[in-house]
Image (cartoon, rainbow, N blue to C red; front, side, top):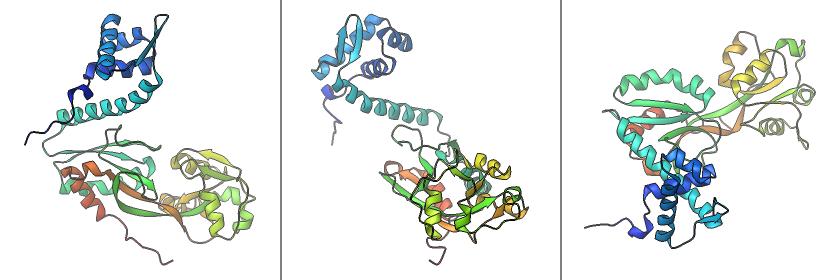
Length: 305
């Protein structure tokens, strides 16, 4: 049975959509013409053709300046995502190796310290799968990024995805011996020390203090760091007490460079997940990777509560 995706009037040409997207992004017809290797009159014709097809005015033309109407500004947000999806799909089609490829977003520290040591086993079991990795700290949209899956920290609630739990996070306060000067502070006295914060866990310290009977009603002072690698160095140099995932500071604790404080590690409210868009769930390379990674994950409920 023949199937038509949508009426032709609702499927403008890629050239017209590119011109509209570029005008929104660049702000002038001359800049659009330069980027698309067209004349300004050709850009104008592309935009006029789009307006005729849509039956709407999309561009305001005042004193030789072109700007998008409010309706067109809303439209171009979705158009940009759609153009990016087409480009990403075309790229995957062109460069896909015979055994398949998997484009994976990873958290820099967790990816390096937890995933990398395990990857030789995956490479041995699936030598024909090409695994491409890029680091991402801020949240992103799978629709606009060329990723098949991601290592994600949180509560496992990324919309439109399925997931596999990899590891619960347990945290421990650590400090350099030089900062402690022989002291062994309890949670209440820990508040008198400079605290180091990580941008990706803005509430980590207040949650830790609450779990140890200290109700915090004010913002906790201290310096902020964007990655665990930098906050670890700050702690090693005695700049403050860092609240660290226990697996990241095992070596520093074992060698005495950092001292764990206030008892055993405390389970945090977030966890590490492998997440993937539901639309890509049957990608053979993704199926192979997630099935293998599920065998590397910790049990669902590893710690009696």
